[in-house]
Image 1 (cartoon, rainbow, N blue to C red):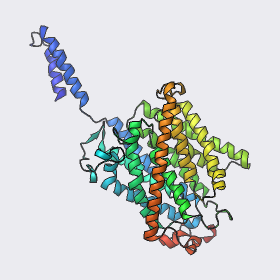
Image 2 (cartoon, rainbow, N blue to C red):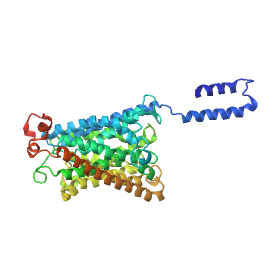
Image 3 (cartoon, rainbow, N blue to C red):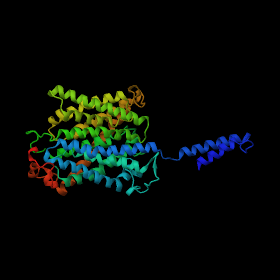
Image 4 (cartoon, rainbow, N blue to C red):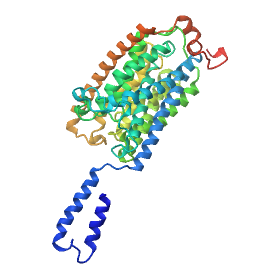
Length: 454
């Protein structure tokens, strides 16, 4: 309708003797401006942005299945590989359903009096999400599915902390409770718009430093402490059964993370392009940093080490990917590679907790490093998106507050959720099951017929 009106007006201006001639032109100009303004206010679908977001959504799902599943699966012993794969698949299924039923609504709807902490119930079962509904200039269906993939991978990250010793039933109960009472509120606080806590504070979390990585990392730390150590931890080697699986999984995570970070712009534009660039820079720098530090300290650069370093860089650049420039990517990559290396080795040994696959050391610590440095790397003089030099200190302070809230929130919810799961079904498998492996006892299958790989 607006296009037709504009065409009629323009034709009228071109016709000699038209009623629009002479003194009427000012009124016509005003009408054209009004029509154009109305057109700008009406959301319209951008097919280019939509195509990119569909691609980004597929990339983020690819991070969990098969990326994370392979990365984690290779790190455990052969007798537990299927358990990890099944946990990732099961969480992808369960979280997708919960996201449709209430997750999307509680994360992104207006929450009334509780808007600071959680969304509302207006979009339960995706009420109102139709073929025609838009969020900005992309279909709301695409945005919903994109965010669903974040809700899938975050609980899946946690399973690495308690790998090889937690009951499958307990894992499901814990994951559902944690998703409901930790993931959804933190997601809403960060990305729920005006009135949400982190948004009102001005926290910069472009793609999930608090929402995904610190949130999951703290839950992983709490879980591995509450479950206790694996049998033989610290007294006998517990080597990964398939380093090639782990390298392949890390490579898939690296590629998929471009959807995670560049997709969070919800558009194919300059910001998404810069997010793509800094993600590559930070990941490469962290991988190289971990490799050289390990080489100097232990005498050999390991495959698992360089892969883990790359993941640390991916984690740390996530909150800064929309605001940092290339220099920021280098800084965050170096800092995360160095700090996460010591967190996953020296600190873990000193503290004595059994974080099986270094969920806290990589995701928790990497998320904290990235969230803090986001406040610095967004500064103009760092090549970032434009925070003035005088505002950097205040921004870092705000970032710190969001980290503290996320740590406390996730820790409290994790303790309660694990306690409920323990009361319902118990947390740990028996010593006999742990010795024989969870694959056969929990799922009735074995990844390999040869027991020599155990």
